[in-house]
Length: 242
Image 1 (cartoon, helix red, strand yellow):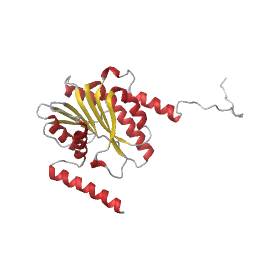
Image 2 (tube, rainbow, N blue to C red):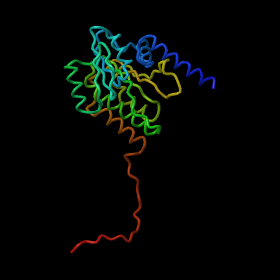
Image 3 (tube, rainbow, N blue to C red):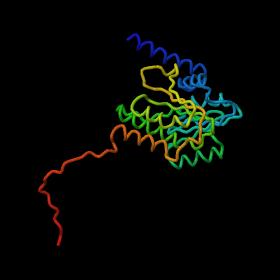
C-alpha cells in the first residue's frame, strides 16, 4: 500500500508540474527527460511526432527544435493546435495518410522521430502486446526511409514478447540502440522507451522491419512450422454428379 501511494503521488506531482508549466500532459516530461539524457532533438531539426495527441510531446519538440525547426505530428485522435507544429488526424499505417505526410514534408528529411504511440487497449495483455509491437514495426517501416543519416528514433514499447526481436532487427541500422525508462514514467506499467541514435541508412535492408520482425516471431513461436499429422480413417465420401 505504501509503494502504491508513493507511485500515485509521483504521477500526481508530474501532472501538477505539467499543468503549472503549460504542458498538456505529464508525458511531456518523459520526452524532456529522454532529451536531457540522449539529446535526440537539436535546434533546426525536422521532427516527426507519431501519436501526437494530446500535444505534450509536440510542445517539447517545438521548444527543442526552435524557430528554424519543423515539427509534424499525426494521431488517430484530433489534437488541439500547437503553435509552431503541424498536426494532422489519421492512421499512420494508412497509405492515404502517408501520402499526406509526404506532401507536408515536401522533400525534407527527418532528423528525429519521436513516437509515443499506443494501440487501443483491450485489457487482454497478449493481444495488446502483439498489436503494440506490430504497430511500432510499421511506424519504423514508414519513417526510416524519411530519416536522414545520423538521425534518431525514439519509440514507446511495452516490455514483453517481441521486444528483443524488434531490437535485433533495427539495432544494425543505428550506432546506439538502448532501452530507457524516464523518471516520469516509472510506475506500475511495463512502459519503456527504445532510443536509437546515429541512423545508418546504408545498413537498411530491402525487407521491411515488420516482415523481418514477424519472421523472427514465427521462428521463435514455431508459427511457420507444420506439424506431422497422421491420417485418420473416415467414412466420408465425395458424391459427384453424373
